[in-house]
Length: 218
Image (cartoon, rainbow, N blue to C red; front, side, top):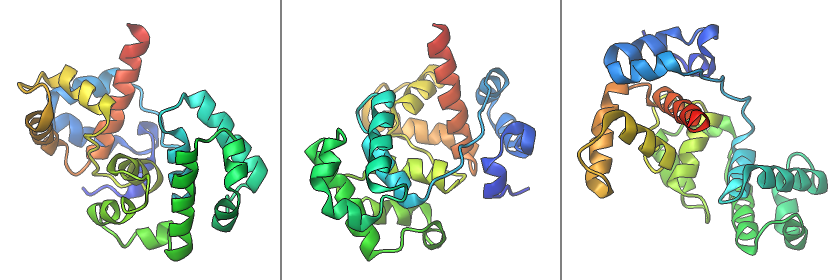
């Protein structure tokens, strides 16, 4: 049975069971993780435009600091963070706590949004790979950021973010691959993840939660 994106976005108690069954039947080790892990529902998504802006704000700083900066931006420039406002307010952006580099990145997203349709409806027509290729053309947006957009904003069900450090660590802990780094490790992890298709996003959500729980208990 094919699961819709709406099913993917639900928690297990809200109809997620078919995805869980698929993953448990295909991967015994992941089945153990699923049995031990509480998976929170996906948050209500923001627009793709706002999701990209927030991803940049969150880069390489503590979550609490990022939250304060984000709230300042919303208070100063309005909840929609209109592109024309971002392009005209470089000094105000910096006064919120952003570095010059991040201001440049936010303005690159704003400029892109002025020139292209960044709505969820417009992005729906693109494949995952097409979206990665298109959006990584924005200064400051890398593959990992677009993959997070695909999973948490657009609810794409089959995304494998191997650039994510937590996913790599969790997979190495769970599967003990022969390779320890580089392209050999990446290929080995990709091969392991083929058994999760077409629900690799869901498998990764379990790995994130599992790793977080392990960190809290150790």
